[in-house]
Length: 236
Image 1 (cartoon, helix red, strand yellow):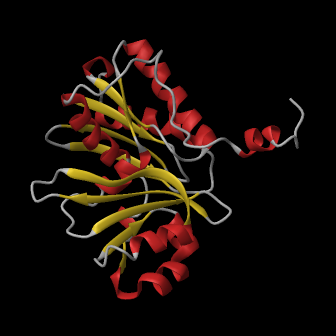
Image 2 (image 1 turned 180 degrees about the vertical axis):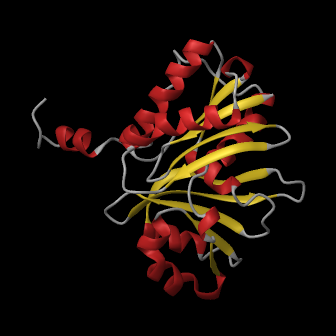
């Protein structure tokens, strides 16, 4: 089984080729360029460097959200176009699940946080069993950072944080949880297409996949423009 995986859900753009035995290649970029500028050139380079025959792909995995509205749309459109052309399924992988999967095997609670602005984060709470299976303790949601920290204080256990929200709310986390708070190192702190692909293989084997026509990103909440329109601040 061989997958091409894409993550454009946040500031990072990442693409990878993954099998059940190996992460063949991964190209990740966290720099001041938009995904519309970087994603297709990264894919082209990845395919060229690995001499990948696209017809050998079993499926295409994509980070399905939550995350940046623009990034999710770009990643989704790229995945849909490739999957339709190759006539292969799409495996949508929730962004927060894939982020947490960076820490498979951890004995700590794993809490990815993505900055959703206005003191809110996209987050979930995860733990791993001894056999590596991931359990979702609290499903993905948009939550006030102070509400999240209050919730986590009830667990009285070590917690590993990762995601772009860490740098935004580092002080609040440290003051609230003190020695229970731990933070991912840089190479594991952001979205990675390799993690998306590895988790996608698990989903595929459980029959969790769709086709290009049916795939939609999971935004979790309305965009700022849509919220403003509902409040009457924007004209249709």
